[in-house]
Structures are given as C-alpha cells and as structure tokens.
Image 1: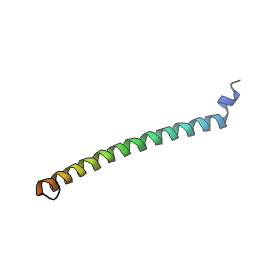
Image 2 (image 1 turned 30 degrees about the horizontal axis):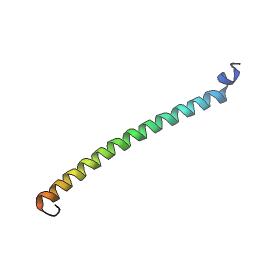
Image 3 (image 1 turned 135 degrees about the vertical axis):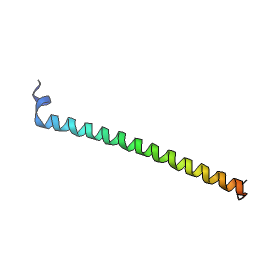
Image 4 (image 1 turned 180 degrees about the vertical axis):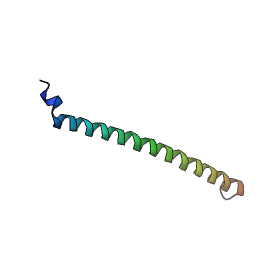
Length: 56
C-alpha cells in the first residue's frame, strides 16, 4: 500500500508538483509587484499631464 508513495516515481512526481506550485507563487508575486510599479508610474505620469494641462 505504501509502495507507490515511497517509490522514486511518486517522490519525483510530488517534488515536481511542489516545484510547480512554488514557481507559480513566485510568478504571481513578481506580477503583482510589477503591476503596482506600473500603476504608480502611470499615476505620476497622468498627474503630470493633468498639471501641465495636456489632459483634463
């Protein structure tokens, strides 16, 4: 009963799933940080354009 869990294929599959989950979490964290930075830059750029009178 424990043989499939302790075999090398099962362990490798579990490690592969773990790595996949960790990579997905890291990608989401990087995407969130990038989106926040892009949003801040866009906000500053729009505020500058509004101040100058190009938009608004």
